[in-house]
Amino acid sequence: MNNPAKLPLEGVRVIDLTWVGAGPFTTKILADFGAEVIKIESETRPDQLRRAEPLKGGGLEQSGYFANRNSNKKSVTLNIKMTEARDMILRLVEKADVIANSFSSGVMERLGLGYREISAHNPNIVYLSMPLTEPEGPYASYLGYGMNISALVGMTYIAAEPARHPLGTGTNYPDHLPNPLHAAFAVLSALRFVKQGGTGQEIVVPQITSTMSMFPESVLTYANNGEVLEPVGAQSWNAAPRAAYRCAGKDRWCAISVHDNAEFQALCDTMDRQDVATDPRYTTAAQRRKNAANLDADITHWTESRSAEDVERVLQAAGVRAAVVATAEDLVARDEHLKARQFWQYLDHPVMGRTIYHGIPAKFSDTPTQYRTPAPLLGQHTDELTGLAGIDAQHMARLKAAGALR
Image (cartoon, rainbow, N blue to C red):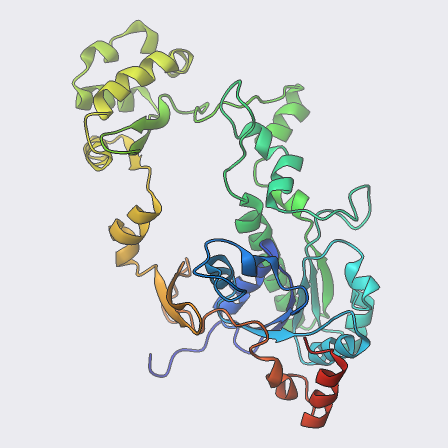
């Protein structure tokens, strides 16, 4: 692209001490829109995500997961337990707008990098912490990952089939949606406040409470009625039938969701099953939910001889909500919408070669939304500290000799 438009966050510098899931996704959002994100890493204790599958080989530079969450960033290796490395971070902070961490409560303070120390060097800094829970309370010192968070907030319990073991969402949902999005929005709000003449401030986004806010029905139902919502699987209070139905082919499915009697009649017309449409067990949504097992069998009898794509096409044409249960192959190789949106992007990684990346979901009319650089190699930009932190080559040599840069 020639003469690209200025990116929305161009000129914003972020010192990134986050790792694994939610934190790096937060800073990735900022990097994607133009912020200069300097990821602080350690050769002795690298980001766990560098070893996470899918792997294109061995070592710390071939994780597709890490690459996807850390594109458009720089990597500097520091041993932050050493005084010299701590001083280097304080130098970086002086020229930064944001510093972010996802450690458990108290870690940054013990390192001498708490908000008090950081803000003394830069009163306008936006200081983001993403601990598991509030800095005070019985869980304050706990570490947590997406799976633990889902369990603690009740998501794992409710995301299951009736009378079956809790399953959860099948992925570390808190790491991918509520926590990074809440944190990124909070940082943008604080940056706006500074731009309008305010000062920097500390932001704490506890990942438990952030995740809990994403599905209020369980808590509100208990608070208002004293009722504990039980798992209902794919069923819903406002749709019946509602499930994924087996189709022709190996492990092919189509999700169908019917929201009123008119849609149910359209489904029956499409299946050419007027006996189902007039069956007294299916007259209302409540009756259809009560007799879901029998109704699902009737629908499966129709879907299992057809391709998932055909079921989707004919039902959508009839005004019934239906969608193929897509696999990764469907999304990458066959999804026409994603192709039209140019969602998938490819970057040349120095170790993995040409690799695929999820695109930036938001499309701007006047601002590029193409990735600029692949995920950095471990310590790839350490030598740039001379410019980033304003130190000379001799200072750099002393830091390396002392083991602070590693």
